[in-house]
Length: 255
Image (cartoon, rainbow, N blue to C red; front, side, top):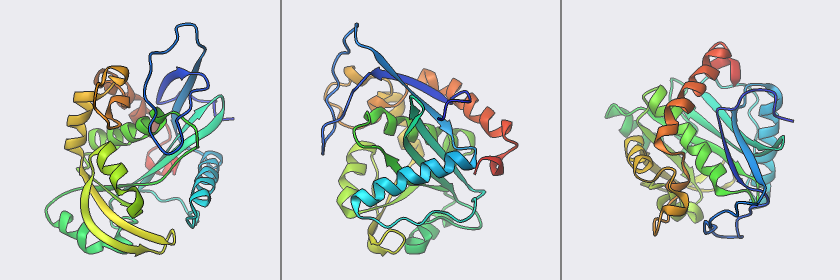
């Protein structure tokens, strides 16, 4: 169970909501009499939570045929978030912050990342994203939004870079606004090819301000941004995120 601390953020969705296979669910007006299901986003600030996150990643990677090697040590430049409902972990992602140890994407795209560094850009890399099958897409949107607040609002990072399988490139472009930054190369960590994508975090912020929290009112907008939190929720989430950082004694305490 994963309910023994205050969450960074919480949202509710109609109980039993599921996304259709292979696509994005069309939002519908909830039935006022329908039971609601609460989802909570927290920091993985203990060994047990990190292990549970690894198990979900291993399951989802295996389902897609990817290799997965768990970390053997805690990286002091990585934060892990997880989502749970009813005490069951249903989503997780890690965020690697650029440092003297570099980023996972440096294994394959060091030349591309060094170009951005030479321009004074501060890079971070979302990694090990896993969402359990059948879970509402607001889980995905919430994890990404909170990682944006952590990296950009709290710590001044300027760009997301991400390695993705070529099959998933259009998803990240269409749903979050990433653009091409490095052509296909083999990624030995997962045993599959990878493409490098980039998203300046200032551009993500513009989309959040425009679409965040609209959900059913988003009209023809097909990205994930209407499923982000509304902008007026950001100060409270940021304060709780910052509090969780300091309550654990700094970064090393929750990796």
